Length: 97
Image 1 (cartoon, rainbow, N blue to C red):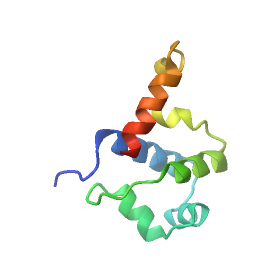
Image 2: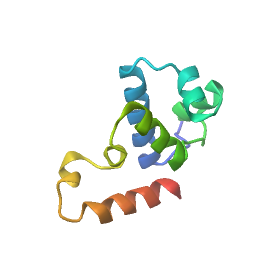
Image 3: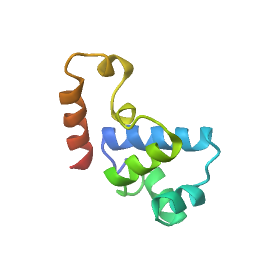
């Protein structure tokens, strides 16, 4: 089945899922942190549905686990580049569209 998400959405969602599992945070707990149902978390993590996290939800989760928000969007190489702010803004806009 073809994914209903864009490449950047898939990348961000996979990073969140990886961080969630590394921190032993269940879908139900993540839902509670974000103020959404664990069913919605499941739909977001599935590529069969168009659902994705909002920017506020991404920021909330990053703050909760003390993870730099910009690392969701940028590689280490991009983070160390002179124009990383512009790259970050472009990627955030692409994710949010």
